[in-house]
Image (cartoon, one colour):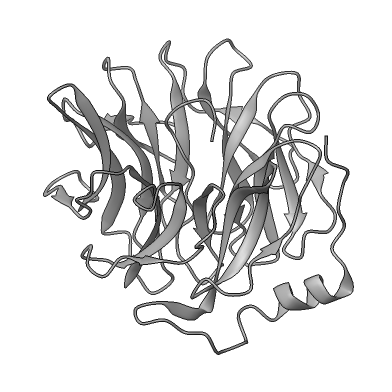
Length: 312
């Protein structure tokens, strides 16, 4: 197992300067933004950050166990993430420079997929404490956990709407994965994607008008995951990616003009950036390791969490 690696002064300074530094800009990128993601380039999955043009990639956790699925707090001061360092999945939080990594859930159950409420007071997450995956909400300090879903099927991947009134999540209660929406108190759980295909990983546009998600397409015995966008009421689903490789984990940019996502089109998972209409995909990470799960810095209006499968 890897030993813990602490950030040195130079690394911390690099993280602090990510949003302020220029240079290295590629066409179609957002160099002044900051993106958190996870990568196994140092053997175990760890949480990293980089500028919006892919430069200055800095590891924040590099732990003894796997750390993944980062989610920025609305004020940009903290990052919630999933860690297996205590022998099971737990929701952790750390400062944006990687310091003060704290277990919030601290339970024998499996907990993961953290998503901050827009006002920063709550964190939605997933727990199997009652035997299957359900969506819960807790205070940002880990107290006051409340269960929102109670279906025998798996409910995963909660994501708050920008106004904090609703939460989307992925549920298998209809026999296949679908994007569901509920009020922030768990009421009025509604299937919004409502398609025979397998659909998962929702993320709201900054203005709350659209939801980007992943749809699994099957043809001739082959399955391929592609990124779609739909109106917030589930209407007008539109395909954004069209590649034989898997395209997953979409996340809107702060201004809504771009979507970050992970793709295997170069032979391994990389973080890409495309225009909100699906054009001009650009590889940001360019690393031989697996890089996935982009989450934009607080100027982004939505955080994202995965909702398909049990492992990153």
